[in-house]
Structures are given as C-alpha cells and as structure tokens.
Image (tube, rainbow, N blue to C red; front, side, top):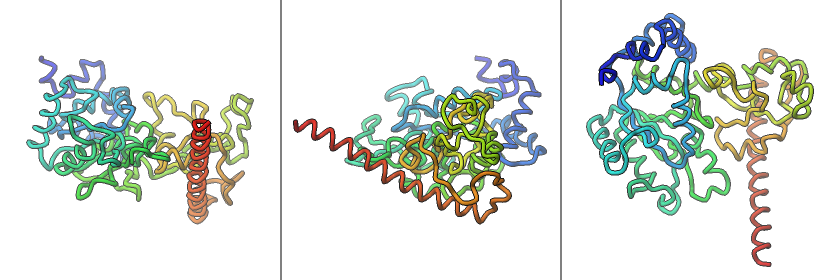
Length: 369
C-alpha cells in the first residue's frame, strides 16, 4: 500500500531508475518535441507534478497492438512513467475491473472530470448496419465514442486504425470502418498513427499538454509535426546508399547483408512521414529498416490499400535518383515527388480493388460449380 502514496521520484528509485536516467529521459522527450535541452527541467517538473490528467482509453476494432506498445515501452520504463503520470481511469486491456464495474468506473470518471479528461482511442469504428459490428456493454462503438468525446478536453487516436481506419477499413471495408476524426466534431483530435503507434510519441504529446496546456503544431492529417514533420527517407541510416545508387536487388544478397538501400525492394520510406529512424523501437535499439525490412508506410492515410503490394518498387521520380541529396532536391522537387507518390497511392488502390474483385469472382465461380 505504501507504494500507492509514493511520489514519482520514489517509485523510480524503487524500480532502480536513477535520477540521472530520469533526467536523460526528460532530455530525450524534449528532443522529441523539438524543444531546447534547457526545457528538460520543465519536463521533469511536469512529470513529477501531482496533477495527473484523467485518461479514458477506449478500444474498438483493434488487435490491441497499441496497448501492447504502451506496456512494452522503455527508456526508462516509459510505460511506468505514463501510468504514474496520468490517472488511467478506464482501459479494457489494462484495468482489473470488468463488466458492470468497469463501465461504472468509466461513467463516473466522465461525469466527475467533464471537460478535463483526455480520451485515447485505439482501433477503428464501424458505422455500417448502425454500428452493430462492434458492441460493448450493449451499445455500439460509435455511440461509446461520441458520448465519451462530448466531455473530453481532447481526443488522441492511437494507431493507424483509430487515425484513418487502418486494416479494417481496407477495401472492401465490410464493416464501414472509419477513423476518429471522421466521427468526432467540436473536440480537438490528434492522430498518432503507426501500426502500432510509438509510445515515446504518446508520452511526448502528453508531456506537451502538461507543460503548455495546448496541443502541439499539427500537419494536415492532424498528426503532431514533432513526430510526423519529416519523411522516413530524410533521416534513414541507409540514405547514403540511396544517394550513392547502392541498392539491395534481392533478399539476402551481399548488398542486403551490407545494409544498402531497400528502395528497390519496395521500401515506402520516401512517401511516409514519421520519426521512426530517430526514435526507433525496443528502447531505441532498432526499427524495421535497420533490421533489414523496408518501410511499409503504416503511418499514412489509406494504409494498406495505398501501400501494397509491400514489395513492389515505388515509381522513379525526377530529382529523387542517384547522387541526389535532400538539399539539392529542394522544396520544389520534393513537392513534385509528393504529388508523384500521391498518384502512385491512387493507382495502388485501384490495382488492389481489382485484385480483390478477381479473387471474389473466382470464389463465386467455384461455388456455382
């Protein structure tokens, strides 16, 4: 019981996290938010302040990957930090209560903290057939979302499914799955896409809210610019090989073993906006491209329709070839490249829909026989 009444500093000491490591973490959060290192003490102050914002975490059409990402975060024990810094009043995967007790806890928190709580949503929301494809406690997901969002200070959509519909919304989208921003009005919505989202970005977003009481700058997809302001291609450790024309031609070849560029193997890094190369995963140890697999573009709208087939090479784009650096390409050519990749996304959607229809037709022909 004594642990419950400890401050964050005492809890971290109990977990073996030194004050020095904690301050390193605060400096890393400042860097993630693109704040100067001098802001690290402010970050520490915000985290140690006993003014925890109430949080309600709803989960709908999801694989629980974002909850797993939260539980397995580190540097140091970001999951512990988040659980200590916020008051997590409702989260189906994490809470001990179940059934009527869980629903009552959510209702009580919503009433008590009206206009003050942070609503985090994981998973897409089905709307076809009046939303019957996802029901919790006798009500549809879309109704749960709208009721909870109406009293929230802000809504954070974690993962691609909650942000843009994700895999459940891929063609033919049989449940009519949508992202949070398509259904919520009158409340600020922030998207933290990815499959799953990177918990360091969620921690940084909450810290920004604690320090400034406002949302960070967002892009036109409602993603925070500190996390999605640059393409993966801009910060990729294989970028030098791209500029030098050194590409992997086949999985397992000598170029692959030497860590050359995965562009020809279908890497979607040039059209994906995310800070994966700088934050990485598994306590900053690695990320998919570093481990030898191309980016699949999981933080972009329309994923997976616009990004598959994953191993098909992106189109050749003027100014994006051999010996071209980010500086020499220039903003104008980057704009051309973005438009080019947008067209590629549309073509991918049409191609994938054609493939699905072909499989369906073959299936029905077989059934008729």
